[in-house]
Structures are given as C-alpha cells and as structure tokens.
Image (cartoon, rainbow, N blue to C red; front, side):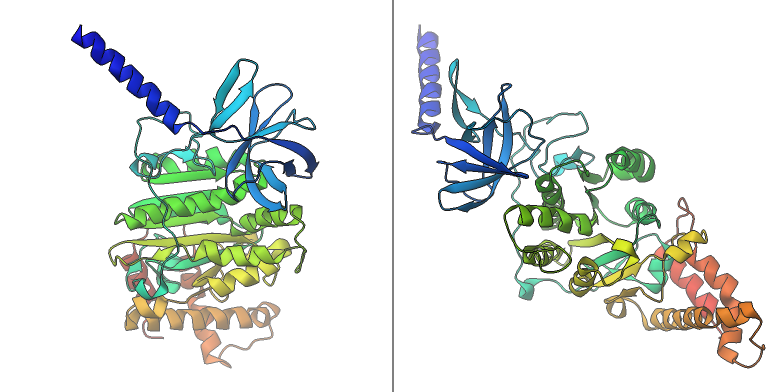
Length: 458
C-alpha cells in the first residue's frame, strides 16, 4: 500500500512540476507579409535571436529566428527552407504550446548537441544539429559559450605552432593564438592547404567551419582530405551553400563557440573557417533584407562590424596553457586583393598567406606566394638564426621574381648582378623547399634546419 502511495505522490509531483514550468498563457502572432527571405509577423513581440515556429498549410511548423523588429512588426528569417507557408499563418514562440486540432501541444525547437567533449568526431550544422546520422547520443549538460575577452587579460602569443607545412613553418611561422587569413581566388588550392593544416597541425582539437561551401565538398573533405585519424580529434560545422543565410552565418559563430569552449577548458585548439567571405555574404543578405543600405560594393555597414566581432572571439585567453589559433580563408572576387572583405580582413588579422593563381597554374602546390604573405608574430616566436635565414630566403625569392623575365628573354648577362646570380643558382632548391606533397609530413624543426642549410654561406 505504501509503495502505491509513493507512486501516486511521485506522479502528482511530476504533474505539478510540469504545470509550474508551463507558460501562463499562449502567445501567438500572424504572418502578414513575406519580403524576400524575411517573414513579417504582427502581434508577437520577440527578442532578437529568439526562435519561433511558423505554421505551414501542409501541416507542421517551420522554425525561424528573430532578426529584427519595427514597432509592432517582428522580422523572422527561416532557418530551413520554408515550403507551404500561407498568408495569415499562425506564429508561436518556440518551446511553447500551440493550438492544434487535438488541443494544445508543445512546439519544440530543433535540439542541438551540447557544447562539450561529445562534439569530438561529430559533424553538425550551424545550429549544432547532427548531420552525421549518429543522433544526439547520451544526454550531457550544455556548455556555455564564452563571451568577449578583456584585451588586458589575454596571454601574449609566445609559443610556436607546428602546422606541418614546410613553407609556412619556415618562412611564415605561426604562433599559438594567432589569427591568419588564407587569401586566394577560386580554384587555387585552398581546400587542399586546409586539409594539410587539419591533418598535420599540432593541436588538441581542430574545429572546422565549412561556411557557404558546395555541399559535395563536405563529405569529400571529411572522408578523403581530413581522414579518420584527424577526424577523431575534430569537430566539423557544415553550413553549405544551399543553407539559408542565417544558417550560414550561424555556422561561423557556432564553430567559434565550439573552439572557445575547448580553449576555456584548457585545450590548444585550431579553428579553420572556410570561408570568411561567405560569412560576410550571408550577413549582407540578412542586412539587405532588413533594409540596411549598401555602402561598399553592395556590403552594408553591419558586415564590417560583424567581422571583427567574430575574429576577436578567438586567440589566447587568460590561461597561457590554452589557445585558439584561427585560419580564415578569404575568397578574392576576381582575384582582386583590394576587394572590401579582403581589405577589411587584412586589417583585423595577424597575418595572411596569399595563394597565387600563377603558381597554381604552373603546378606549384601549395601555391603560396611568400612575397605577398606575412606573419605578424613571427618575430616574437622564432629564434634569431631562424629569422635571419627566413629573411635571406625571401630576399633571394624576391630577386629571382624580379629578374626572371630578363633571364628568359636572354637580356641578362651572368655576372652583372651578384644577387641575381645567387638567386638563379639556388632557385631549384628554393622551389623544392616551397613545394610539398599532400601526404608529405614535415616537422617544424625539419623545416627550420632545411631552410638554414639552404641559405648558409650565401
């Protein structure tokens, strides 16, 4: 009898807890207008970033996010493709009861994987929803994404990062906590270079954000370029080109949240975002839909405000034994190095690696143009002998590039320029140093030793 009474008490307690946690009223709005990608809803004031569910004429709901408001009108943008939305559709806040033919039933937002160790080896979308078919797995307490860091408590960049790419290790040395841009036009080997970095970089966790890329590339990158071993320590956030601009923008933010969570829990993290340009394009689509005026080649002011917000979240935190080193690809429209996004990115990043189409067309991979590339923290993390060797190698590279046209035309007389003679003599070794096969593994110390041997005595 006492067991039955305990069961009744437990059931009553469960029901009371549900009643106490339920909303006191049911709020709903009406869809008044669809303008491009934006839903205009009346009668449902919401907070920016809050989710809502829009009833579809074919049944069910489509999830949307509040991106702005104007007086009594709330602006929503669907997270997934919105099909079957009719005029006057009812809109409910997510995770609240909605009135259906069977009465009131909860309308739940799509569940995301919690920030934490369980994300390792997983592939998720920009909202943290699993894409790899493994479901949500075991329940875990949700992690909390870190906010902006006080610049006065950031640990300085003082440790070298071994990226496994000889040209970068030797001539463009990267430090832990640095933010680097990989600038290139389309089809010059960005994805291959990112794969080399993801597989060989010395880090505890690698977070890869594929923002606005072709959907075909997601599986190819995970299965063929990343590989099984590297994938076990990686988190892939995929928001391909056919995703909504909101999902693409959130892909970059969620990848950043994942990276900063692992940093705040004592890990050395490498964040790779491909690409920063498509993050800016997604933000442009959202801003233009809200009526923001374009100011520079169609980009509204909010784009240039959002980019530093995203980039400044990463880097070193207060803990000197944890870091986020970030690589952002920047797609140069028409190979124009001065396009607005590329110009802004150079100003907020700690260095850039420029990939040359001329080198790529000649079969030189990775197609890194060391003349146009720079690492702004190399002088703080590299030794003096290493810096001297790198400067000498860049001088010889630059001298060869300036004089090669004279040599090819037969207008140069050997012996008239000692520096050019040295560059011509060493060019085969310099070119071999800058080339690297995809499966070739080169450590940091090996890169430095080879570089010093290359320029010794010249």
